[in-house]
Length: 176
Image (cartoon, rainbow, N blue to C red):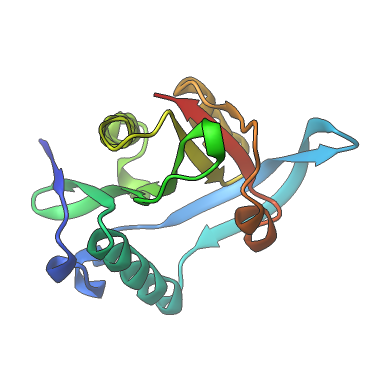
């Protein structure tokens, strides 16, 4: 049975992710060409290195310590999914809060864990003054299908920092 709870900064370390499998075999991605979204063959395997995990731990700790939201899904006390929302509103009247990460371990996908995490993030964002979640999302067809199912659409206002850091990501928003 899956258990969900907020994470604390003091428990965030590499060991917490020891049973988490961040692997995604990607074959097709969405790409914007001449103002239109098209599916393109872009095969690669998305997997995290130890450096990626170190960065993740640091970023998630910072999110918590600055007043943001980090929420985890656990199976037999092993982290199998997580979501994070940054605490600073941006985007003027859009009143966005940044959904900075959402991931489900490869061995647990397709069981509704991502939906529970996403809904928890939406609720937290709404309680903290946002009108919309902003998502700079992986452009894979599978990832985009998840966000579409959650009611996300292309963002009205792009966060330029995200566009510069991850030019192949899709910039989405989801009303709360």
